[in-house]
Image (tube, rainbow, N blue to C red; front, side, top):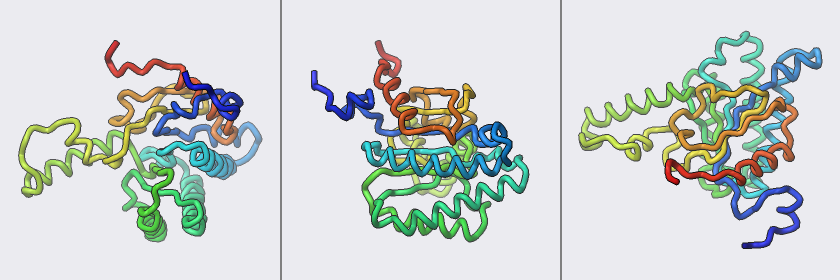
Length: 247
């Protein structure tokens, strides 16, 4: 058995057994703000800072894929002022990411229907994906206007369209061939899904991809989620026996 390094012992996990792909539902921003008698928008601003820290930490420890749930298809039901702040925070983050891209060398992809976003935000997203495509470091997937069921429906529609138009052969559909129509095509499924805030559900997040993901729930609200909390989730993951239906 390989001995753990002093860094591994300090963090509690084995760097040789890190999850390849971590997905996070960034939940609890509004409640974090309300508990401090602040507007919900202050919680989203704090949550954005937490995302920056956790994304950097994932990059530093060697996580290859990080997928975060930033804005769901259902989140449009929230007050317009709150939605506006969330979109402004995303725009601010993308401006910063573009400025540091050569230094950080982070690849970024977006899951979801971005065509309903503002033209300015759509342009920033396109620039970010294009400029970061050449990098081979950690890949950060940001789910915006994303829903797991919506993704499956869109994938089915695109598959049917390709068959009707002769772009692919009309043959038996398999899980592997259908996966090529998902936003996550070519990526490994999440090994570990983390949901802060005490809610015990996936909330329409990566429904197809999380069939065999390990789930980790914590009562910590997202703005308070620290690098040490991520360490705890990784330790929990490494202590599980992943059988994938076997023995």
